Amino acid sequence: MKRPSAPRWKASGARIVFLIDWNRARKRLQSVVGKGAAITVLTEAARNEWGHMPWLKAGGDRLVFEAMQAAGSGVFRLGDKLADVIGPAATRDYLIELMRISSQAALAGSPAALVNDEARLVLVRMLQDRTPEFDLINEHAGYCHAIAQAVSDSLSHNQGNGDGTALQLVSRAKGWERSADHILMEARNHAERQAQRWQPVVQLLEQLDDVADALEESAFLLSLPGAEKRLQWTPGVQRALAQLAETVLGAVQEFVKAVTVASTLDTTSGSADSDAFFAAAWGVMRAERQCDGLLRDARRLILVEVTDMPALIVANDLAVTLETASDRLLAAGHGLRDMAFSRTGATA
Image 1 (cartoon, one colour):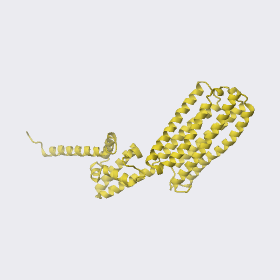
Image 2 (tube, helix red, strand yellow; image 1 turned 180 degrees about the horizontal axis):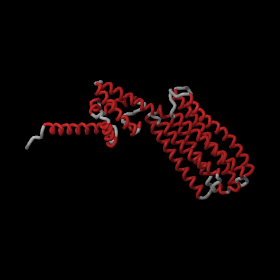
Image 3 (tube, one colour; image 1 turned 90 degrees about the vertical axis):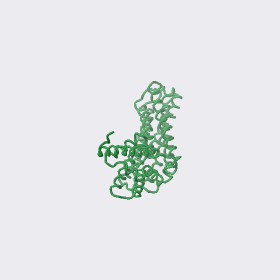
Image 4 (spheres, one colour; image 1 turned 45 degrees about the horizontal axis):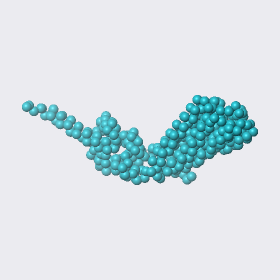
């Protein structure tokens, strides 16, 4: 058999070596991410001409594990995967960044220890920049807002009770309330791993979950058989209940604003950010105080103008439940304030 020419033989050998190293890098990456993400990382490294060999020579997946260990037990527990803490997308981006760092270090002739230090620093920055706590709080508040909006619309538009509209309202509200419950359970799971970071979040979400429960109960009350006698709810009582529901909705909207601003606060935040947060937080407090007065006004009207006992009970319970939602929201607002102070380094 004729031996292939030297250049062709060398090219074939180079491809075999590349394939072996590529598979080795893929397997090392798969100890951190899934196969698909590992291939994405290697493809991105090749596209930018960083390659995978510098990363392997710098330590490969050991860079990731040592960076996680350096972050401390307060962030990662034994057996944790990086993606479980920072998410699959962020993990993929982190690995791509390590490919770049390793390549540049190799070209500059820098020692592997420098790559290790940079890997730790990049991970710390990613952990600091992420706000998964506020993502969960914001999502939960979104469900509260959806229920509050539905209840307010029902009262404002005088939609008929006991019919399909009311039943749909109850079904939607129950589904949103259950989704909010799942968010609370997710936060509790995080708290089992990182108690110091997540326990305040759990406490806040428990208060916010009380808001969702009260709002869902309000939707349920609107569907009770006694509420079918809405003709016995005079226009004055109807307006009072609608105003109370609208004020609760406004409080939830202010809370959502406060969460959005709080998630961006840190030690470098300016006065404009702080002012925006406190404006929204005070909006929640003002709404709660308004609800106190609106509850008293509604009760006076209900006792004077509603003569049918079932309708009276439903109207009174609805007013009390709506005001309870505003009380619980104020408590959640205090918890959010403490978290915001913690992020800015201030004392609550």
